Image (cartoon, rainbow, N blue to C red; front, side, top):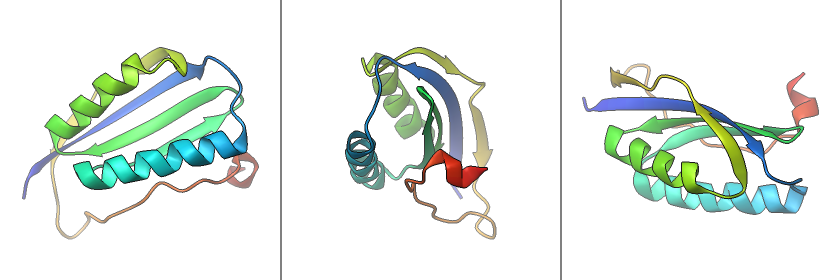
Length: 105
């Protein structure tokens, strides 16, 4: 099984995002991430982003480098990235989905 990595970060949006913009952002992320073999979760609420990325280390690090340069947010704060060995019994494909934050309470 390949080594995988997860990376978690939080950031502050530089402006307000409408639902249609977030939907377009999520669709573009899904397309890119599928091609790069990445999975993740993106949360946007009250002007803040929180994201978990998971995949092979090179792909996660390349995407995070792009994310850091993205002008749609600032104050990007990364938690300690963690490498781990994939477990075929627990490793599953999960997708990013859009859900209003009020549904998470």
